Image (cartoon, rainbow over all chains, first blue to last red; front, side, top):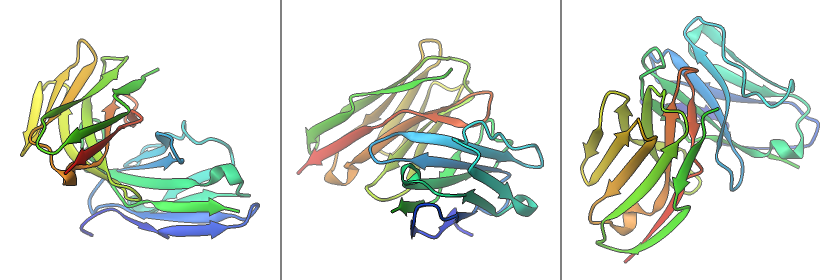
Length: 115
Length: 111
């Protein structure tokens, strides 16, 4: 596609439910990132995929959060047993190079509201 | 641990002014530095990418500089316009491969 595509753009869920957020990176991009942006806060790194390497999960805030990337393309971020503090905009980005020098391109984000 | 700071947090200027946004980082061992723009309710738009070996990059009315040794970058916006109103974010990439972001500068350009 022309850009990074994320879905859904908005998701409202009840506390305790599981949610899945999808990211479709720019075609051919080998690196994929997930970030979280809470109201009034900066961007918080969650997880980074680079090619076939093991992902860097160091930013995941708890074991309720997980992500996978199938076939080196589409990624899904899963939040289990959602809590109100999980409410945020979840942003995905992709990059074309090894990830060390490449420019990141972001999607429009998925806004998650946990009631 | 890398920390990125942006000053000021907010800035309001009249249309036509030239302005400078500042970004500082604590660990000079970076691969690159990227400036982004974020409009309310939107994702991030990449403005300029400066590799660690470069001193500056220019795109239209925007010029970004990088002084790696002192841990500083500036984004210069010439002849500001109301359409430049947005939050500007600075981010650095280190050996881990992920970007570390500052909290941004919210710019308002008044007509």
